[in-house]
Length: 174
Image (tube, rainbow, N blue to C red; front, top):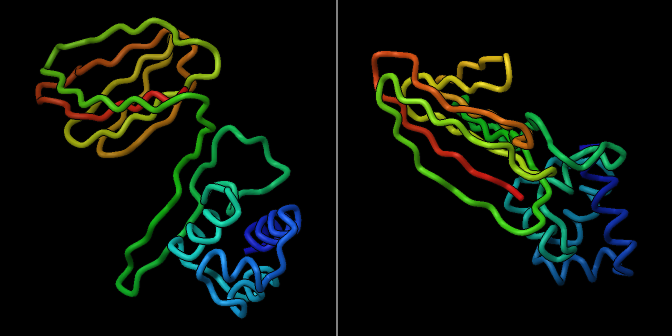
């Protein structure tokens, strides 16, 4: 809440907006804007998205430490449900041009060798089924029903070292 309060207030002031003007632009009540900026209220991601659109800011820019480097955010809780559910912002990567999303299916024994991407590129992996082995140099990272972010400006490979199929999404961010 501390980061959200500072980021919303600083961005609002930099835009030359009063709390009332931001409320009108975002459709969020002035009372809620004031509570967020005071750190007295935890806003939903939907509310922060509306404020972010009015301030030309992403959700990640509103919830992260403004003094931290802006390459990736890891595990920032954004929502908790009444029955134990939760929404977690895993990463946010600055995007210069685009994001490519690929659906992959590796059969047992399959291996794909990738060349190094240009500097500044990242890959997000989302494993849906099976266990994927991500090879980064001499390091092998096993990913099973999870996600992983890495700097892809080095050679890397995707391998299925198991006896069952692997399905995953690969998003390249550049």
